[in-house]
Length: 495
Ligand SMILES: [Zn+2]
Image (cartoon, rainbow, N blue to C red; front, side, top):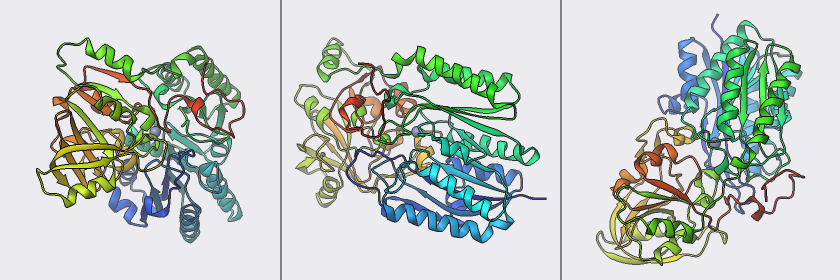
């Protein structure tokens, strides 16, 4: 008999040090059939689940799906809106469903919930037990989830991305759906969770490098060699959440005994500790980087100046000017940068094409991302800011599918700089962002990249080298600059 699967999701990575809350208008919200219609073919995890469900002839019962770009703490209206709709829809169909499948991020913090997903999964379990319903609850998680004991205790199985950049988000959902399929045949599994004392900055958790690389390889070996292990999820965590559950953790779903699973997880933590230094990589000052760059007589391929402190995929506003401002004070040319500044983009849309205009750009969101820069440049292009991903498996597809909206955008150019202004902050995870606006990133000498790791699939292949630059911003890799209060004695730096 065909299975009925209740499908819903909430996706948000919450940066609790940002002053501005995330509100309902920041979320893309799909109800009922929209969840299927809007996700089919868009390369997202939900798209992956739908494909698997259709293949298995499962009947999808869609509930509610909300997603927003990484940003500040989610406000009360948004958390209540999601929960109200979710439980109303679940109640309506609860006696007809065979499972609940959730597309989550796992690092959401809201006004009333430090551990939103943990509390949400607990509420689902108490609803199901009140209704006397016993069904699997399977969830997809982002590798940056801050996983809590409650998330593991109140779900049947969670399955997380293994790659950072997240080129595997769609296939992760397919794998999670196949685990659900196995659970229909044999529902008896157990999950265990092992937290650690480490909070690693985003720059330290790329999966091409240690510690993640070796730990993931070892986890994969265990999954392959022990048929009782369904999965081991290596959770990098997300460092900008001031909550007790912040940080690196591992969890395991097993059909075998949990003491064996616990041994596996303990061994993986031993690897983490042996390689922990790599989890806190050092960054350059701009001066150090420019000293090295100035020795290169002819820049044939772009050099990337990575600005993790304004890592848009980590939640910051994308309008930090500290690095760009200092760079413009040197004699460097061939610079490409992207600044999110709706006000400046609007000014450009009101100007004449090819006009030389003067305007203040950037650093308008808050006081933590530098000062506005006065730019004099020619207006080369305006657009609605819509583009399609060049790489359908881009990290960006995990967050928002393959069709991206940067809002009204503009390109300005002067002797030093080609600048893309956007109205909706858009992480630099795909070359389509620049190419769609008439900027060929391969022609640049220096490209400023507001990211930590997620840009790598797009930009590393076209670049000669990268420098990670320490600059002002709330996604700083130097976690000691942030006013943590709730993390107890967790390690945020090795200094
Ligand atoms: Zn992530």
